[in-house]
Image 1: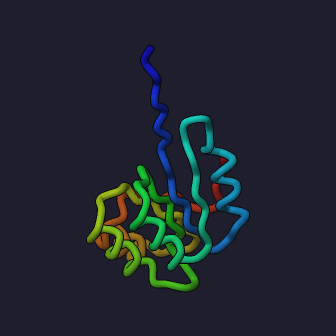
Image 2 (image 1 turned 90 degrees about the horizontal axis):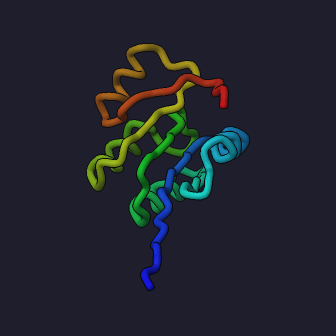
Length: 112
């Protein structure tokens, strides 16, 4: 008899607003996907370095750490796709974050 191993994919969501994290979790979580929500950059970075995430969704305007520095730290250790959530960044700010290592961005407010 052979057993089937189900491996769940993990997504890390980092946003200052818990409500946004919870909305993303509600929209994306299913039987094969676990969503880890963090409002703290340091906690998110520690989790990122420890776990194997298939995607990071990151608020571009973090309150407790510079987003560019966080992306650079993430890129030095792994090459997990990073989607930015932006609220009011100008095009230069977005380009700077993409050059730091983000893969793409999604404008807030989200329509889940």
